[in-house]
Length: 303
Image (tube, rainbow, N blue to C red):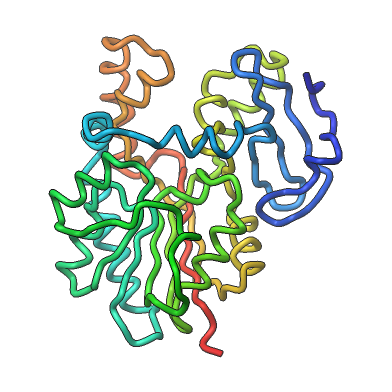
């Protein structure tokens, strides 16, 4: 178990965002054994001991019913507004001259359906068979089953989009390299990814003060599904290292999961979660809650 405030073993010294060494490690979670590190340079936080990559990949092997339940727990109005704003922004910043869009981890295809309505030619991939089935039913688009490294060719798309994917992969640098490969010169990457916020700082402080005993919120925020929670500085550095020109990287408050569902995932009883969700939803709807997301637009250079 890692002592509170000690530095990590040599194999864990590199920040996945900016590449800096000598991070600070928190105490290991007494619930899960996970260890969260803090980059002293860029402020990114990451899980130092994720499960093996094959286990993580297998965890996304959802059937249709399981994936449909996940979709039902989303705040659809929030997502639809973000989708519309993203497509409008892409129209403004793409310089490659076309409308071919590839959505990485396209889920049930909701974003792709709207992109098609707005004049884009949508393509995408997924690992979950249940999501591929739902996308086929709802959009008529046949998603590529597999990660981006299995897609052949280069300079194929004018836009690549990712909605909370980067934090889920064991090797985010490789994923960004694959995106750079398939984007046309002047094409644009948009990604949304979880951001380290004041809420997470409070959770980490509590974990440190209790030496890994009070960790339910931290375990929920940093785990095999969210292996990195980025800062703006760290995400910008990682995109630039992959060869992109960063157009913008902005923190936003965007909560895509229904509040009562999220609270129940923390172990809050159903009745208490429903009651607490009413007040939290008011803050979320009025944009008064923590900025939990980073939106990045980054362009592949024209030359």
